[in-house]
Length: 139
Image (cartoon, rainbow, N blue to C red; front, side):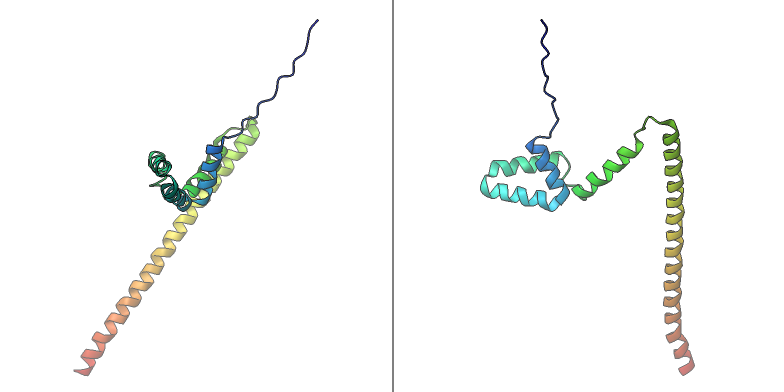
């Protein structure tokens, strides 16, 4: 006689700490600092632990927690192969083309900034030359 036992499926749900960390990361460094200050006010050991955690995880010195989390995830996902060679080739070609377009656009913006700087400098030189021309005409 054989019995079939149902094995429960284990779903990996993040714990309360991981959920709280993700929630704070979505709101940025200000939320981390606010929680740390409040925890110092209510129970200082928790505030001290949060301070050490923020320093250890480099959240204290990062530009923005929210930006680093959001920018890291898409790039990691884009590099993962799908298993379909035709799609992977298409994706690689599209990413290469987009990188080329981004480089061209950045070069265009650089030329635009250079042209604007030159126009502003020329205007400055013209404005500076006018009073000198007026002084010599008055003398």
